[in-house]
Image (cartoon, rainbow, N blue to C red; front, side):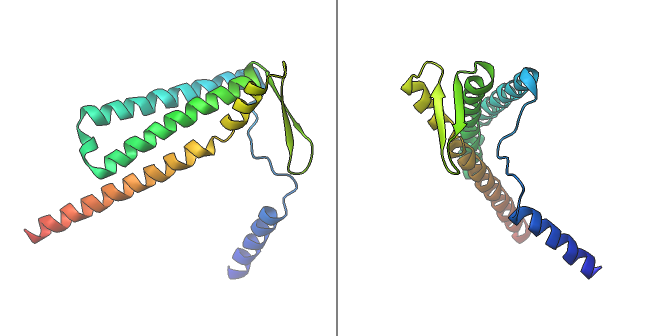
Length: 159
């Protein structure tokens, strides 16, 4: 059993450390896939905006954990708006053309060579600047809610 696990671990490590190709983006399989994907972004935006509203209406934002979760939802809204914009430029309107010019370099060109659109596209592709904080705030918020619950249980046991 131990040898089998070591073999699986070795194969997995080899696949991770020596990949044939690394694809960091997902293809959407034709324009229909893009529309479905864009619709998912819209649904996510509406869901997170609804969560922000619901937290405010219920008065839960007075608690630290819920404040962090509300901040997470706000960053998820920003991330989805950003991703929606990038997908529209990339896949729907076909305004942007990205060409690999080296191992570490790409050339971004607008069909009309408008520098502003190219720069905006470049900045929008940095969507991790919204997504990573959203995930971190969600984690911290859930962690705070768990700590608050544990503190409440401890207080009740002492009473």
